[in-house]
Length: 463
Image 1 (cartoon, rainbow, N blue to C red):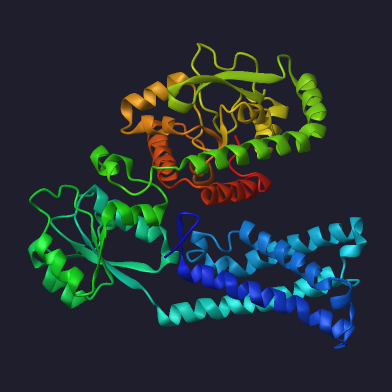
Image 2: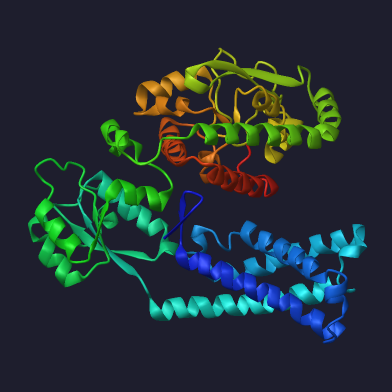
């Protein structure tokens, strides 16, 4: 695993991205050299065509990323890689064709968006096929032995299975009978905790993950020290789960363990920088979206009676209430009885225009005002209505920690999962929010903003 932007990525996925980036640029350069010849004073240099190739490469890579060719799921879905490459590069070719229509000076030569991108498709699809074949032939997996048999052990085993791109494989677990309602979820039992050293000597794992739910008087400290000094990586289960999943196991960690945990701190300079970044992005967002305001206002007015702007009390920093502003997307008095129900799929309360606004996230534009006023940041935990916040705070451990930072228009939980409609959903969402609070930084904010752009452009997750 490689730590970037305070998040752990697969090393081989990053290597694949770098290799395919170089191949992509090479495939774009080749037809240009054939077209203009080998003259050192050719237009490739004289007319800044190198910059134009970089722009084309960036557009192609963006569409490859948007089509999940570098996401954690690419290993499980690698059989679909060929069709995804064609879809992504086809969309890139269409966008390039439109750009060349409006900005002819960007075009390297006539027909480049077809010939260049076609060659890119052949090169990248061939490379990905060879990469997959090599991975399957070598089967390089880092074996993992899990010490534990409870909830944390199950969570770690599930996270390893879900993050196949990281190259870990559970060799088995050490402990008592696997405490799971579904026996098929259980890895192979290797033995009891008393046999840990001999089991590790036999299996030869790269990592031993200590995932015992109850460690008092049960943790084989001496055996773990022997393994650690002999070169075996001994990892804490909670930390390993955090690195794999990008969230904290809310129901499995004690508040006392967070006191000494790394993170949860932000320097005054970082706080000021995040505030400046949020203010600038909100100001730019409002200026850019001003031409849309009149169209949205007119569409809402013609579609259904009621106010244009929807106002609702939300819980923000330190539990203080503030008024959130959005374009109205539901019928007036949609929350009858005074309780705000989360939006559902095909919610009948949503108006025709509201459905489009929600799908494109245009209803969120007025929140820029909340950000300018300092009530929110651009990135942070999503604020809820007071009734929902109080209900969650009463039933979910550590929930009030969400109030230790300013809420955001987008956040780590929003880009990692969809809407929350149940207590279980909100518990899972808190797990992502706590990961963000623990690891928050400008670089992580930028990563979240980039992921948000992908979600908005793909019109994903809107209700």
